Structure formats: structure tokens, C-alpha cells
Image (cartoon, rainbow, N blue to C red; front, top):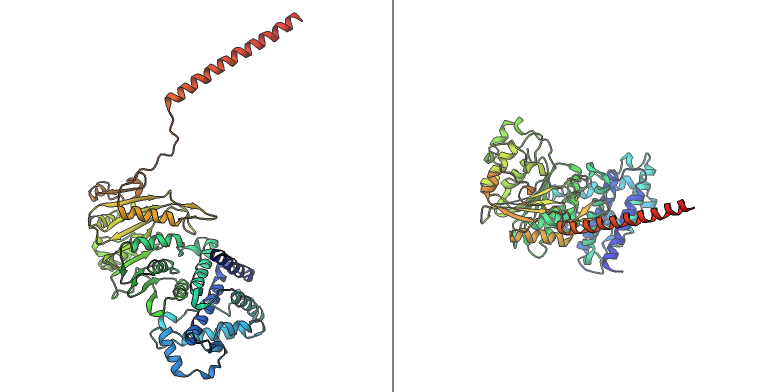
Length: 518
């Protein structure tokens, strides 16, 4: 069995667990239990691997809790960010899950203990609340303790049965991949409410490569609307062989989603001291003011979300919005996120932001913000993507690439709306198509029907319209008709019709003559 076949089989098994065990519970509501169990197994095996340190004579799961000293515990928390006693390990809990009539209570105690182990340590904010959504007392699991325990046991045993190989070899990759697979499937099956914050891996890959194009190393990477962390993780994958000095930063307003993002970091082997994702409203209570600027910014902020805007007169003095001289409309906060990202961007970096197409051609405040961006030479490229790439929406979104180190004043427009592969529910970008877009972005060369660089003066003359279709001529897919050839064919057809009529008339005359003689 090839590695791809193994991964496909693993995905099939995981989805079967997620789908079969939930019973009548809504898939989106049930996701935290499957994801949480997968995470619980990961950190248990990760922690045991750390304690054993490659010594085959030591099996942490078999040790008695009483042999653990305070010094061992203190050292482990400082290194890993948390502590798990042998009895609390996933393998030991799962082994007795079917016969434990206190399973829901025991799991709750273990999760509280793991989070509590970080209290007073630098890792506390990264560990706190990780298991908050794994509610073992929820009626979603069943109306009685027995029902709850039965469903929890089924989840644990299902995750226990997943064959993920040796931890130190490739298990980390498989865990992370399995986690992203589950999130994407839940998002795909949940409709708009569930999929709002999930950026598909193929789109994340494009955005990450745009943001970090040409950089050999970056100080840090930032996502102001972090969601489940997929954009940050694509940045990590892109930079596996390079240097990310200070790690991964993000802010997320949704409590459940930030837990997914933090788990996602751990599952991709990013230690607590290499990421910092904070809960809060990015526009009204921005974090990391003291940490900016960032060399790479990636973001897929919520489309046209409402915000307080001009109802708060102090915001026009905010150093993120003041330079533009106008606030994004109250009903459409898109440009508020763009200006926020620009403010956090370093002089050597790039920001790649998914945007709703309407912001690039509407008038009013949005036009004034576009003028500010173009006149100050911040807009490097606008890319229009194919429709139906995202879960929960079929619209063809754009990617705005901002830069503070442009070497000329032109603006590049790329029409990638025809670059996609049809998939079951959504369109996807292949690696070849991503490479094609990056190639166009890198070269800045004009390519018929695909890319065009336009002077800032021309953009200004066009009322600062940044819509790709205004500059890149769409390919005419209509069939080309040769009039000369068409006329020749018509003459042949007419001659043939005339001949047929003559033949028919002769036949009719012959028939009529025969009838008269008779």
C-alpha cells in the first residue's frame, strides 16, 4: 500500500468514526469531540515520547503516578508547556473506556488537570481553555450518564484504533493531516455557518506563497483573523527549510475557533513558545501592538461583516485608520481589516488578504481607501480567483497583495478565474495552477487574458477601480466563424436543396402520370 493509499485509508477511518459515532448529534456540533479526542491522543503520545527520550527501557504509560517528582513535573511544563501523569494518558484511559462508569467525569478531571498544570508558567495562556469545548456533561452526548459514557467510549476507542505508526517517524504529520481533513470535511458539510472561518488548504497554500514570495527568512507570521489556523500552518509548511525567527501570531474573535487553531498548532508540532494566538476583536481591541511589524501577513477575514465604524468617533484617530482619512463603511468592514494588516506590515514584507470583490469597485469611503492605497504605492497585485473555491460561498473572491517595498508604481492584475479543477462539492486549485499564478505574480509580465500591469496614473484615471476585469481582457471563447467559408457552404446547401426539389418534383410527376394512365 502506497503512502497516499495509507493516508486515504486513514481519512476513511477517521470520517467513519466521526460520522458513525455521532448518531443523531449534528456533525458540526459533534466535531469538537472527535477533534478533541484526536488532540488528546496526540499530546499524550507527544508527552510520553518526550519523557522516554528514546530510551526503550522506559515506558511512561506503565509508570505509577507516585514516582513523578515535582522537579520532573516542573521541567516538563517548562519544556512542553503542560504535564500529563501516566494514569492520565490517552492510552490508559481508552483501554478502560468501555468499562469505566465514571468516564465522563474522569475525562473532565484529566482535562482540567492538564490545563491547570500550566498555571503560573509562560505556557498558561496557550494551554488555558484548550479543552473547553470538549464538554463531557453536554446533553448532546446523551440524556443519561450511561449514554454519555457510551458515546465518549466509542469516540476514544475509534481514535485509539487509528494506525498512525511510530510517533517519532511520521506520526506528527499524520496527526496534523488528519485534523485538517476533519475540519475541512466538517466545514464542507456544515454550510455557511460552519465554514465561514475555514480556508481550504489549496487556497491557503497560494496565499502563504504570495505573502512570503522572495523572502529567505521572516521574523514572524501574522493572521489578524486566524480562524482554525490553516493559513499560518501553510506558512510553516512553506518555510520548513527556512527560518521563522519568532513564530506564529494571530487573533481570533470566536472562542471555539481559537481552540481549534491552538490545537492545530500543537498537532503540527509547533511548541507553545513558537505561537501566540489571542482571543479578541481584531478591529476594536487589537493585540500585538508592541510586537509589530510582521514580515508576512496572511488573512481571510469575514466578508462584509458589520462593525461600529463611524459610530465610534475615536476610531478615525486610530493609527491604523487615520492615514486613509476615512473609515470603512459600518455595513462592510472589509477595508478595516485591510488597513489593520497594512499597519502591522513591515517595510520588507507582504500581506496577502482574501477580499470580497465589491470593495474593489464600489464608491464612497471604499473608493477613498483605494485611493489612499494606490497613491501611497501599497497595492502590488489584485488576483481574481475562480468561483466556488470556499466552503459556504460560491462567489469568486479576490486576493489583495500589499507591499511596502515596491520598486515601481504600477499595479498588477491577474485573472485566475479560469484556473481551477472541478471537484465533488467545490472547485480546487491544483499545485500546477498555484505555480502558474505565482509565476505570473513573480514576473509581472503582461500575458494576454491572464495578467496586466497598469500604471498608478491609469488606475487613478479609472476612479481607482481595482477590479481585475477592468484591466485584463477576458478571453473570447466564442467560436470564430469564417464568413467566406460559411457562404460557400450555404451555396452548396442551397444548390443541394434545389437539386432535391427537382428530384422530388420529378418523382411526384411520375407518380401523378401513372395515376392518370390507370
